[in-house]
Length: 208
Image (cartoon, rainbow, N blue to C red; front, side, top):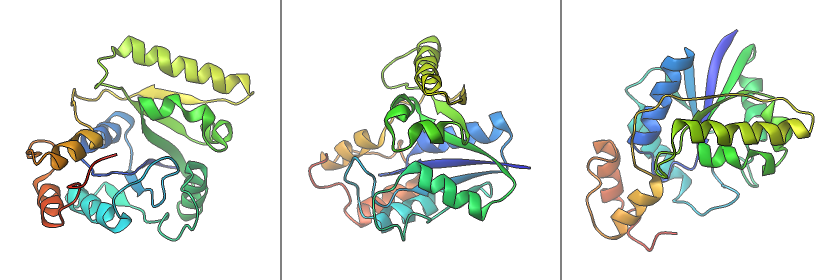
């Protein structure tokens, strides 16, 4: 049985933090592949055009053969829900043990997701600690255990582990703000992504 991980998100834009999390997951859990799934219509936020975000993902991941990009959300007419993504990818990749790479902030909201308690037991969860808030690993573990308790109250199971990620204090929102203020992002994203953002004048409008 192959071991594959889904890394879903807006990736608006992709940055070094995303890439380090994916690399950590590959090595820590001995995955065959990380499948990046950009959300076309994220349910709770506005984002740059899907096509722009896909090209930036392609530029950032093209040199790693263990990285694959799925455009499974491209033809979805409604909102992008995680459980639909997993169900659709399971049809494309049979005989797979699934993992889901997720940041601590998003994992904390899992019980409130659409069919979140059902999704919780359909894959193992690989959680990137929230470094921007300065939490310790112990605090991150406590938050994860609280989520586990919420899921188990609904008679569902959940398997999770923290990723041993390097300390990288970067987020997509910080990058968008820096672009809006015309500041450099040279150390925050791959150079190909930085050039794409500059060429297409992305994020020069007032960020969300």
